[in-house]
Image (cartoon, rainbow, N blue to C red):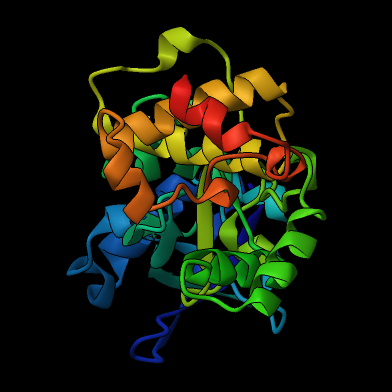
Length: 284
């Protein structure tokens, strides 16, 4: 029976051990042998550790799949691998600007991670969500959006120009579902956006779930304002009126005079300058 000698290094201590394995062993059983034969591994949680193949380019390093045979990887004698912890930190930002730092399995693909990520945030329909890697322009646009209430005209002009470049969901930098965070080159300091990518059915929306409803509301509002989801002027007026009703309650003329409606936060830009549109919103 074919066998191969592997060098098992422990990154934390720097210690390296030589063990021989048959090539028809699964990676899962290989890890079990490491646990039973190396005292340094015996005190570690086997659920949190795995076999890792490092590379100078992090994108080319990878974790061995526990379900595969060792022969799948074609290792030669004295090939060095690492026995290391699979857990890493991941910073997630939701559409309402909330950020959470989660502990996830570095060996899992993006698709496999979605259940864990959504469960920790309180989202049940995890199969409809995915992760976006924001570009520099996305980050600048978000910063300007947060500051637009007190920003300069110059900043507002920049915001509008950036919005024009973000028209469809296809243009977002979605992470490939079949790749790991490591293969994407995502480090622990990077912030990823959690966004709903697929809309299979409205039945998947739990109207009793405030977290899911708020994230969906913020995402759809942004999509309407930036033109990703085009709507008619009548629809825009109806939605703007409902938004004002939700935020301000019943219309009080004196209150509106003191706090005029910010149309840029209520309407797609093509309708903002329409004659009498603010009056139509207030009278809806």
